[in-house]
Length: 189
Image 1: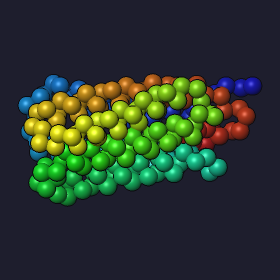
Image 2: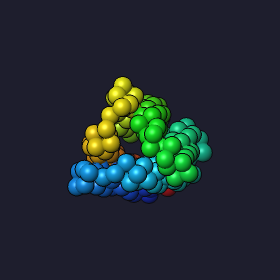
Image 3: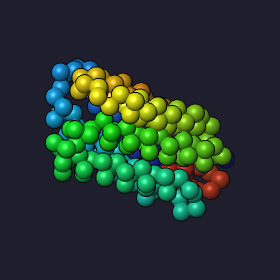
């Protein structure tokens, strides 16, 4: 049995690094204005959505993970575009946009983890990412009047944890055994 490196694990690793850099940015400059947060969130959601679509495009035809990734990508791109098109309105409802995006993304990550259970060990990272996303969304919905600084710091914590879990999963995917089918969980071998 030949073990090769997962050819597209790096897409997930890039998503993790971007999330962690975004989270770090919020801690280095906690006085960030709401306008900058709005645009930064839009950019992050758009890039994350694009990378999810890349992963979906590379997913095997017979696997069911590509549908979750595609939907996650479309939601991310939609959130990014809506943020850029209506930044003032977005600032007023930013908490709700981030909360809904986080919950949808989290549910899709949990669904993907359940479907990947047969292919990998360590799907706990994907389940943890999904659970973290859902909990973050619920917390934001429970306190929609939170100040911009508090939202920035909470989002920073979320982004750092989510990014770290993405990196864990990426490096787990890197060492999968692809010899039996010639296909990967996230892309073609």
